[in-house]
Image (cartoon, rainbow, N blue to C red):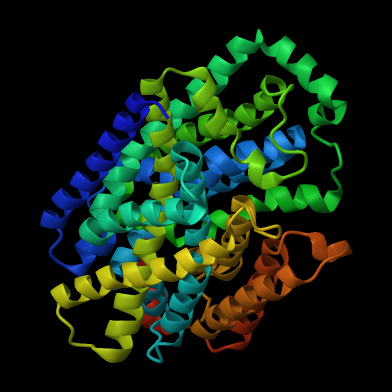
Length: 496
């Protein structure tokens, strides 16, 4: 790698760490550390939600899937765009107001417990357990992406690259908490946006325009041009169903909770959706154009792990070393912006939902912040061990997209229906939420192990449907929620 690229890359890393140090000085209690004191403006909230949502799969996984399979992978982008819009439109305002009214809830498990007046702590503990399990897989997918970046860029071994990337991300999340995560996400979101606009445009220009690109891709395999190639009803449903996952992603919906006002939601929605749609199309076209650009030196021959390097190779062959360094920083941004959010939500589950709720009810704010910080390290260590098993050199290693898919389905299936129905249905009960969550989470885990026929549908679909059915049936059988819960529901709704 050129010295200029290395210098640019290092300057970026130092900048992210400085934000962590500054945020450390602004963090005095658990609410600051976990939710930033509900002080995010619409721009920061929107880009932070988008950047923490998209992760390394936007710059590595999705272009890799497009490069390996062609335009039939565009269905993921369609499903995600619809899901994200519906999430901003129907969940953001209500969740922002309800979490404040419900005893100023600062985590998703906290909200569940307060919303249903669950004195048994079961809702809080089981939802925190779901967060820890699925975020560990999700975090490991980001660490795999970071390892691929450092490995490809600096010629390191996979494990060396994995450890260096992990240390950087853990450092600023450990120090600054939510404010560090949100402000670094804001900067990272801008970098990701620019990278996803610049790379496909420059590559397209080098090839000779859109028509030439399409002709070259068609000469490799005409099926690459067909959005229906190899698709069945089940596979299309599975790709579109990614959109269902948005309603249950803790690292995204906490951005709604952290907005300074319900009035900021429309502006945040406009910024967030514009960023997302442009970014998704940029990623899709990067992978598609890669088929034509690397026509004489194919990257994959069926190996999805190699195809996920297509964006990395573009940064190397298309740009001078200074620009290349910035684009590599954008890839690292995508990785860091999701891992830091996941680590933060997981550590808050440990501090607020396990440590305080079960062990030390009278723990001081400072004590809880430090429990959260050490939780970041503990969770990261487990994720690093999982990521080591996903070394692309291993024949059966999971791709980034596979790891993300499992965690995304887990949260969507376990939390999505509960978030939606708790905000819109006054009759929902604690027992309905608890049993629905358990059924949703277990369905994802079990369905993932089955294959063939109907079992090939993405596990989020059956998990979401069964969760909704269980919530409705159990809630209707159960006794009606107390007058206090119903009054609070009306109060939260009135704010909107």
